[in-house]
Amino acid sequence: MQIVKYTNPTVSYDKVENKRKCSLVHYHDEYELYYLMNGKTKYFVGDEIFHLEKGNFIFIPKGIIHKTDSEECLHNERMLIGFGDDIFDGGTAEILKEFTENKLIAVPLNCQNEAEEIMYRLLEEYKSKTVFKDTLIRLYTLELLILLYRSKTNIKKEPELSDKIIFEISEYINSNYDRNISLDSLSEKFLISKSHLSRKFKKVAGIGLNEYITYVRISNAEKLLKKADMTITHIAAVCGFNDSNYFSTVFKKLKGITPLKYSKNANHIK
Image (cartoon, rainbow, N blue to C red; front, side, top):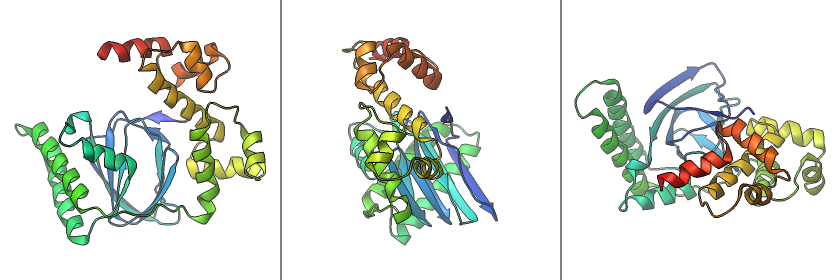
């Protein structure tokens, strides 16, 4: 599998010039807030495609595969904030719900300036070795999220025409992962040649079509394993795997742990 797990720094800043900025397909165990300070970039998140411009934010839920690609834009300046569930409580859970459903965030210019000030404070605090550093980082992050929540304007998500077919196919896979879907069946359904579909999907999503199907199935299997009310064999079947042993092998390869152990660990924490 080409999907990798990254652990981001709590706060990071990066700037490139005269170079295409393209990340590998990856996921995190924490949430991520990405702010594009300059440039343009395409962002593939799960089964969605976003086109970010200067001043846009995007919220990445934990455990969701994603990648960036600036394509023809050869200058890119961005800042990332990573955080865990401890940011959210009963009073702020609505922020998580809103940004999970509407990941692309645009705010007025005055709010962008205020948000940048908070992010620079976060960066300075992250670099420091002062007392209560972690507490301040948490408070600044929460302040930033509340500011964005209050000031956001909805952006209609419309993939570029050249990406539209891949967006539709990824949506279809996420809704039908329990079925016998393959390159052949998708080629026939969407009236696109197998070779073109394979190349186009890899270019847009950053991973092969079969890898993406497997990721979607394993991701949904994770959710079912946490419920502890279904057998491994049953979960394998409803997630599109005909062989539970093969399912266990693929799950361990991708997640580093067997489905049975994952289920026991998840339910022990409860």
